[in-house]
Image (cartoon, rainbow, N blue to C red):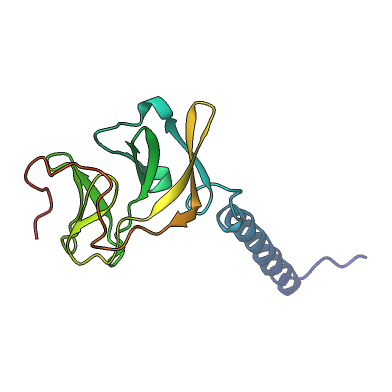
Length: 166
């Protein structure tokens, strides 16, 4: 007469099988999160908006590239949202026509040049290329802004009161 599996062996095999299945499921679901993405997002090239949609008197924010796009002398410029002072997010203020850092009060003109505040230099820029219709922003190629006190390249005084409140 053949002897079947006893209760202890059955439970032992069940636990081991369950642990293996849970481990495999955990690895399977984590792989999508852990694997690197190919050349997209910050640190890579990001396709943004059509070049014709980039404004010449204001700035438009592109979230995927963490950048503001504007035109200076008909050239598209990509300004990083990060304040050079302590890394806070700089916001575009429509009423003043300037970039303003709400953390410590630095203000920058539309070209990203520092006008006032504790920032040691202007806003950093990303390399820009026009590929077909879209503006490509290379967030891996950063150029530091001009030192504070440098002459401004555009003549645009503030339009009105600022948005940031200390």
